[in-house]
Structures are given as C-alpha cells and as structure tokens.
Amino acid sequence: MDGIDRDPEQYFKRYNAKAPEKGGARKGYGPSAGQTLTKAERAAELKELRGRWEAMCNAHLERAGVEQRIDMRSHAERGTGLEPERKQLPSAWRGEGRAQVIEFRAARAEVAQAAAELRRAVPDTGAEIIHLEAERQRREQAQREARERAEREKAQQERQRLERMSSRELAQEIARLRPPRVIDLVERDRAVLQAEAERQALQNQHTEAGSAAARARDQAQAWREAHKVQAWFHDKGIGHAPKLRELEQQREEHRAEWQRLGQRIEEASLRVQHVRQQAHQRITAEQEPTLAKLAELEALQKEKARQEREAEAKRLQQQRIEREREEESMAALEHRLAELRAAQEADATQPEPSDDDPRWAAFERTFMHAAQFEHYLSLTVLAAPLAGLKARFAAYMDTAAEQGMTPEMFAQACAKGMAEQERRAMQEQAARDADPKQPQEDSPVSTPTP
Image (cartoon, rainbow, N blue to C red; front, top):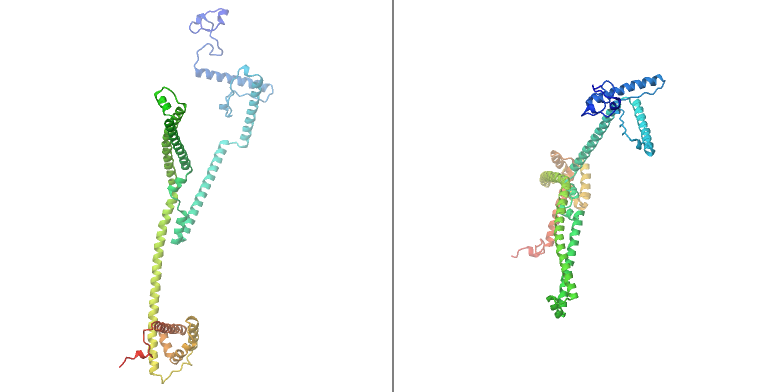
C-alpha cells in the first residue's frame, strides 16, 4: 500500500510514523485508507459514512416491512432540541447506571412526543410565540396607559379639590401635610437609636471601668496606709503582699479596660455620626416630593389670600357706595319731607284729603307693619305723624314717585325716618338724664338771675 514490502507478521504491527519501514502498514478503510486527512476531511468522510449506513439500514428496514427508520443526523441538525447523551464506559452500563439511563431515555422520549404533539397543534411555534409576545406587550401597554390615565385623573381631581379651597382651608391642608422636622425623624430613626444605644452602653461600661479602677486604687492606698512595712517590703521586692498585688492587678485590669473602652467609644461615636448622616440624607430624599407639593400649596394659598383680600376690599367698597347712596337718598327724602311739612303748616287751613287716593291703603298697611314690627314704634307715637302725613299724602307720594319710589318703598322710608328721629330723641333724653349738672328747661337755675 505504501510501497514497503512486509510479511504478514510485520504487516499487522502498529504503524511507525517516524520509521514506516520498521512498523506495520497504515490502517484504514474506504477510498482514503492509509492517507493523512485533515480534521475537516475526516469529519466529512464520517458524515458520508453515516449517510451510507443510514441509506443501507433504512433500505433493509423497508425490505423487511418495518415502519421505523433511522436518522444519522445530530439533534441540532434535526432541530429536536435534545442534548446528546454522554458516552459511557461499559462499567457505567450496569446496575443502577443502566436503570437511570433507561429512565432518562424514556423521559426524553416523552418530551419528544410532547414536542411532536405541540408541533401538530401549533404548526408554526415560532410565529405563535411572536404573536403571544406581541399580545403580552399590548396588554402591558394597555395596563400602563390605564395606570397613567388613572394617575392623571387623580392628579386633576386633587388640583380641582385644592382650587376649591379657601386660603384658610389651604392653610389647614398645608399643616396636615407638613412632615415633621428632619432632625426629629433622624433622632427617632431605628438605626440611629440602635447605634446610640450601643454607644451609650459602651459609655456606661467605660464609666464603670473607671470607677472600678478608682476603687481598686483607693483600696490599695488604704491597704498601704494600714500595712506600711509590708508595703515597703513589697515595693523593694524583698517580699510580696498578695492582697496588695491583687488590688494593683485589679487596678491595672480595670484601667486597661477603661482605655480599651475609650477607643471603642470613639469608634461608636463616629458610627453614630455616620448613621445620622445616612438617615438625614435618606429622610431628606423621602421628604422631597412632599416638600415640593407643600411649596406649590403655599404659593396657591398666598394667591388665594390675595384674591380674597381683593374681593373683600371690593365688597366693602361696594357696601360703602350703596350705604352712601342710601344715605343721600334718605337725606334728600327727609329734606323733601321737611319742605312738605313746612308747606303743610303754612297751608294748614286748607287740608287736602287723601281718602280718595288709592295709594294710601298700600302705604298705610306697609307703614304700620314696618313701624310696629321692624322698628318697634308704638301706636301713640305714630298717631300724630300719621294724621299729618295723611293730610298731605298725595303731594308727598307724588314727590316720592318722581324719585322712583312705590307706596311700599315710601312707607318703609317714612317708618325708618320716624324710627331714627325717635332714637335720636331717646339718646338726647338719656344724655340729659345722665348729666345732672345740665340745667333743665323748667329748673329755676336755667333762668339767669337779673
């Protein structure tokens, strides 16, 4: 095959690549037997061999009338989605290993059958997955839009509610929403409280260690005073005082503990400061949305207060204008009534009856009701003025009609005028009664002495 003459014994020996004449012939099969092939060529030749074996095996299966067929392609080429089995040694194909492999193959067959049924039910699985993914995204988009719409509606309702509030109600709303001070929340924070408790516990231990060291020192000093000779020998190293040694040892231990706790207290204080800073930053960040809303509410409350002040000023100005107009109208009416009374007195001999005037009935009814039930005037006070008014009613009413007044309006004005006169008379009388020094008209002191 390779041009080297070998006997049968040498021919079947192992091939020697470095010295082919010393070894056996190169083994191989097919058209490339004995040739050195590349990895790609060997893979292609193996696939061709598998293809030839598949065709020959399926031909014999068909000839034998068997429906099953073999497929020498890999799972990846067939698109089964299965993973190839790991190659096992004969020792692994015994006992429990064999049972596990058989169970695994049965489970894989069930998976393959389920996949086949899925392909029959859903021919285009990829398209169905894309459709389902699109449907899921559409639903998520609809839900997101619904949430955003609900949030916008809620925000709009909140704005409308705030806009309907007065400045006083807005101030109450601001007071309700205003969060506590950050420094107060920091002091109540759980992490800060825990860190501060740890620091305080160390501080208490530090104080106790210092007190214990001081007690041991005082006890040692007292023992020295009570046992001066033994203390002198102890200090010189001639003898040892167990009690003094114990007290000094306690003092040193407590002092060392005191120093160690002092360092831990410094570390705990730094930790408390760090935890406070973290809590301050966290709480400040949490309060930012609320504080921003409070700033908007405060601006709205100031604007509402300004609008309310302007509206109140306009209302008061309008009331003042109406009151001045009413006072001017009443003054003009009183002036006209005075003129009519003067004319009545001048022409008392020629009374002008008003019994035939149809307006008198409405005037009298309204006047009597207003005088008695609104201004609380007595009939005795009303008799004389009403009689004089009735005599000249036509002239008075004509003058009032020129000013656009009806009999009822004229009656109300007359009743109010009489009530004002009666009130002023009562105030003047009360003032005279309250001042005894003022001389009365009938008093002898009111007339000067000749």
